[in-house]
Image (cartoon, rainbow, N blue to C red):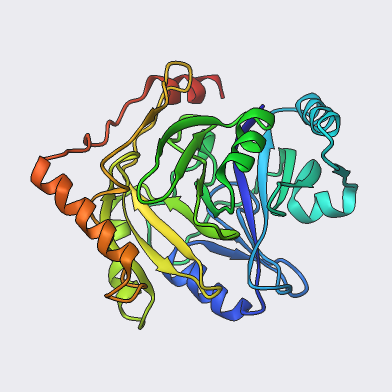
Length: 325
């Protein structure tokens, strides 16, 4: 069983741009990656974000954690029984990823997934790239990743039925949106049925609302850095903005998402649209049909008086996990 999103890898030749973006805006810590790669920390893990310095701009891999070598072997067997080609990697790649063991395979859209166990923990404390209170990680993992997909049904069968992701909620208008959890984070993975392929965004959650607000101010100093304005999502209740990365996809920078109890959660269809307010898609032309429809859905939630719950500081699931650890 997958436990969390451990790390994300990005292919990009714009490593200097990524270094400035990841440290000065996001607040990550750059660590020595060797060669053309850039590694960035968010917490006590030795790496959370990897920029490879090669390949076509975009997603290189997603790294998903399991609890033990036995869990890793069981997953590999299940994938192979389903006809999925699995590569068992040796110490060379494991050392690069700072994990004990890992396997890799591809989803039906050709996205590379790595699954690992035994992440390395740094001996020195995390030092943010700018003054922030820190990232919300731990048992919840790095954050979440959202992919464009061509055919939702094909990816649903893979991620939900084969890998064991649990549907949190979903929306069908104006296009299919499915959100999946594997721990208390509302979603560690999501897919947008846009008919395209590749990464839409990844999200990192901050410990303080001021961290997000100050990041928003910093991002506004750069032309076209803001992709979505500050807003609040209707399903996970995250207050966030989206910034354009050097590789032209997005990073959601947020605070205040709800933490769910995976044991009792029941999936449901949402009808309010992705955002309760804000999140104007300024990266799209003013006349864009998607931008117009999203705006109309937000105006309807305002007329209807829809409200997302305020952040709850205590969560029985998260407290139980922290207590066990």
